Image (cartoon, rainbow, N blue to C red; front, top):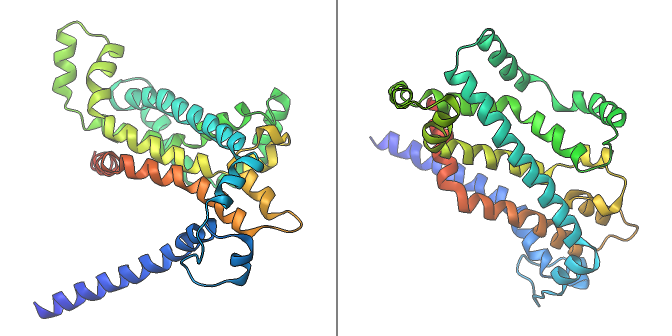
Length: 274
């Protein structure tokens, strides 16, 4: 028993140490966002000597971060909405309906999990150029929606399969069609899985840099990561403003996860069990 307790304590100590190492850069970013330029150049400790909101306010207003924020919100919102509508219906079909090639098509979607996204960058850019949407927000949303297909289909299909078939049979006896059954029976029961998918889609979309950097050339369409990159690549980067901009990018993601963490964990566990 004592050996098991010692092993548990060592595991907890290791996890605590890992948490501290992981949190330190985040804490330094928060600290730097409340320092002026001179103080951050001097270095110093984690706690600001003279905390100030001036860095955050100037970064938000002077560097057009409000416009970048709205652009990121637009791209992320449209991506999440597209994913939830398209792949929720597709997953219902994979889980419940019987049609030729269902199993092969499902595993084709899942197999795309093993295709590195970077390999699709050039074909996506060329295709968007021919379609005339390169450099637009639609040119970001469509690839983002498509890129989430494998994991989303896997999670939602498993979640729908966990719904007892007797509920569908009972709804059939009441005269409900497939769309009504999906909306009234399956969608409410799979709500935690949909919240999980929404979070897993929103976070990488909000933070996405590569396709946005390659695609967007008009500063009025920049998203937050591109705005941050423009700060870092300036001739004389103001590191306190870089920290403030990073905090502006991170806070919505942290707030989203804290608000939805209960649904996120339940949905992930339920989908994996299903």
